Image 1 (tube, one colour):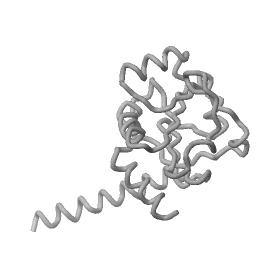
Image 2 (cartoon, rainbow, N blue to C red; image 1 turned 60 degrees about the vertical axis):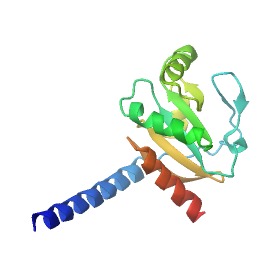
Image 3 (cartoon, rainbow, N blue to C red; image 1 turned 90 degrees about the vertical axis):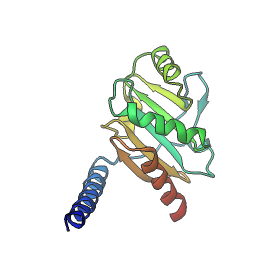
Length: 167
């Protein structure tokens, strides 16, 4: 009897968490700037690229994070694992210092995803990103999903699965 009640309460708690998380994601949802295809981004090596140039055979993750962000310490390894699996990832290091500071941080943690430094937050402002981490899933140039705050590897995998499945 007590086990059934515990299971029922656990399921209720999980559904409540999912609903609250979805509402927060909707409220915090960023906007894709209209000039996305005309704005060149520069990675830490100085290479320029445009987001629409990135491979479109899989959904792409645009990951806004900061070296100072506590939740990003838990989310960045999941993003790195997805990049290793072949998902296109462009990360925006928000207000994280100089390019050398960001490079040192990435090297220290062995992160290998493409990173753009945004020391003044101008890119984040154009995307209306106010919370880190913010993860945007672009599929065929359109935003399919955005999530903010901590998320796990499996949480991202489920979101990517649905993005691919529903497209």
